[in-house]
Image (cartoon, rainbow, N blue to C red; front, side, top):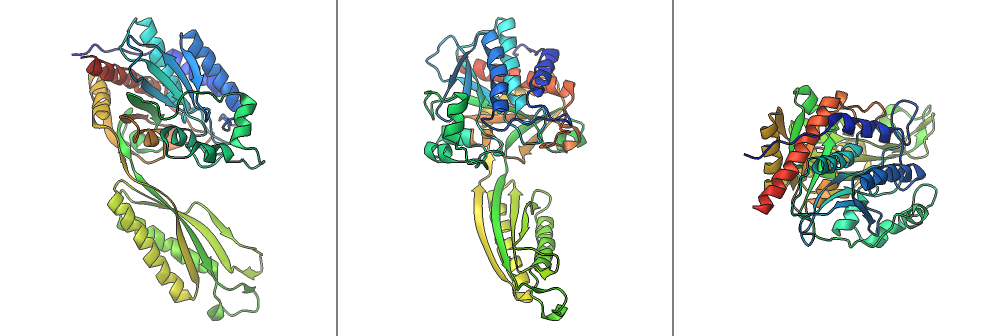
Amino acid sequence: MMKVSKVNGERLWGSLMDMAKVGATERGGNCRLALSREDLAGRELFMGWCREAGLSIAFDAIGNLFARREGQDNSLPPIVMGSHLDTQPKGGRFDGIYGVLSGLEVVRCLNEQGIEIRQPIEIAVWTNEEGARFTPAMFGSAVFTGILPLQTALDARDAQGISVAEALADIGHSGDLPLQRAFDSYFEAHIEQGPILEDNGLPVGVVTGGQAICWLDVQVGGVSAHAGTTPMPLRKDALFGVAEMASVLESIARDFAPKGLVTVGQLEIAKSSRNTIPGRINFTVDLRHHEDQQIAAMEQAVYERLQIVADKRGLSLAISRHWLSPATPFDADCVAAVRSAVQLLGYPHQDIVSGAGHDAIHLAGHCPTTMIFIPCVGGLSHNEAEDALPDDVRMGCDVLLNAVLQRAQHLSD
């Protein structure tokens, strides 16, 4: 049986709290938008810790940062851990950051315990995971894996008109590491960003994959008219039509329960006025399910059932697909390494499917990949009140350390 190794939980917590001081917000959260001065400060703090741990630092053309520990055979592809350091405008202290600093803690422990492995180990900091400053989200890993053209990402601009290329030049974090270079495997530790683990009283989730996501853009057209002179039976009110459509969307979620999820996250009344009947409304629909076949059925149900509402009310309806991300199963061997590690440690756990998008979803098409989840308090994330418990933080990193060793041992046999 493989020997159990453990991390220094107090040191990991201290690193998380020190990072939380960079871009700190008044309510205890963080704001480190991608490629901003605050993001640069967070990267510099991380790089300082990495250099103290004997790691070398390099960048690729989209600003992804890689900290490398050499192995016994540096011709082998690296085992990679990581996540992101950028945050939402009012983000938390753990989303993304936990995966990066857990990777650092793993390396620190390998150094302290004198553990040498054949493969190099790298910690990845992916650029613009959040998508809060530049869109699309997760474009650092998307460019690396070849999903998104480099120039498309470099040309993206923020709300102030600053391009990614300009922002990278400003912070000096563009380099010449090859895109799509080989990885042995990729492990990402992350807070769950939902309530399942906490509700079940479990400190670790063995992530078996990511669910399918389908984004739709919906435009509903009625007739703008005076609120005081148009009788109710003669109106073509786009908002009342959308209200009924929202109820229909909720019923679709019930039909595909418990794994089907439906969200209307944005709604805009065009040229709105207090005393004008809404004539045009744009809104978004976010569909999620663990299975591709079911997400396709949900999408079809949206088209058919919303059209029934529109026809009944004399409204026009246009629906277009904005984005589709298929369900992503993680690598069986990497998942097995995580499961073996958590069982070896004796930590309570469950299998779980990721409900959020992560860089690991992109990496899964590039190399063997998996994730490790820990609970977040109240299931809150993308929120200044986002929190995690020190014991959960430590246990998740223990699992990461032993899963990486399991992977390394397996490959060294």
